[in-house]
Image (cartoon, rainbow, N blue to C red; front, side):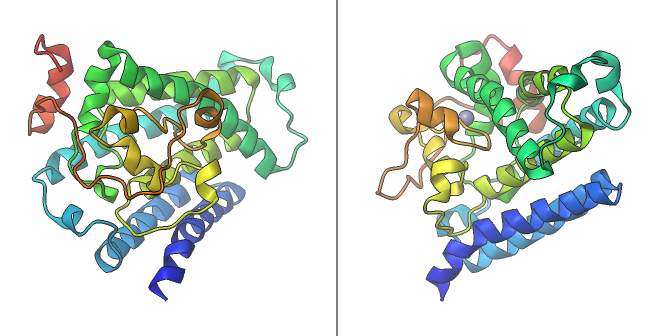
Length: 282
Ligand SMILES: [Zn+2]
């Protein structure tokens, strides 16, 4: 039974959350419904982590709960303000009034969402890859990779600069192509849903889904201290560009339990925000 459940969690939680957001868009309350659905998903994952953990060792307190929550609130708050300004407040139309003609609005909503995800993924993939392979960006991304356990609460633990550069590579292209606001909202929501599933410490088996989507199975390799394993699986939502550019990695053995980085990282939220700007080598 436990085994059968492990195959069900990812598709079940993803489909339920995405359907809730699609419903929220339909009734004209996307932000409210997204936030309710996201909190419900977080609670469900928190309970599943206790009942069906992938790594027992990752259930132990790492002393980073306060910084994890502080980064999450800062990032989610600013990201939502930007998404709301760009979509609902109509900044998109001001920025690119003629662009709507380029976007295939006649396609079904689901197909437009997939198109939006693929287009956004190209920028997200290269930004994430650069954040690992180019030291000036790694300084910021190291805050996320300094975790020694993966669980739902450190999904949003990113340096604010890391989050803003991610938005900067994903959103403008969609705006310039004239993607409708509902598609922008759906792409942002799917990114958030896949993000929290990816970091969850729930025993999930994703099978063929891991060929297409970023899943916990793949992302645990990405947090490995071994560079040959960690500098892999850069996709935020889709593994398309990892497959195309040769960075896809999913070995048959179990991913490492000992994850993190080799450099020191301050323990406090403010220290973590400041460290990339200091001269201390990362
Ligand atoms: Zn990374």
